[in-house]
Image (spheres, one colour):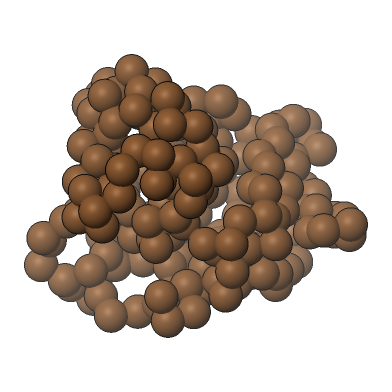
Length: 189
């Protein structure tokens, strides 16, 4: 199953890159991900981490949710749980579920995350993500969010608003999984 997802991710990145008439070098410069790594991902020889995939997607003008949406799928306002795209970060083991219905005209993506104890994911500043914003709404566990120089400690029920393009770090300092929702606004992209 993981191999199939790696193949699908690689095929989708290559297709999107070619649709935008980008070379591997062009995408590498735009994303800050090495040409060699993008090539390995496109050939399903490497599983991208959440951070790498987010940077590639941003350079292609997509959110992770839009990237994982089924291409050509008939848009429906209803996204049933069993049909929602699920992806596990190979580096941290965090589980990401695209909750919002794919293919709709909305600039908002809703993502549910199960973030393992001790996990940390860094999203460095990236120009392609400027203009995007997100709300992080914690349901269970603990979450430490770093935005610039400021560290926010979230407890269940807390919600943090922040820009995406300036870079940030998700960290679970607790002993239990953190369960939270990300509401991402692509800002008319």
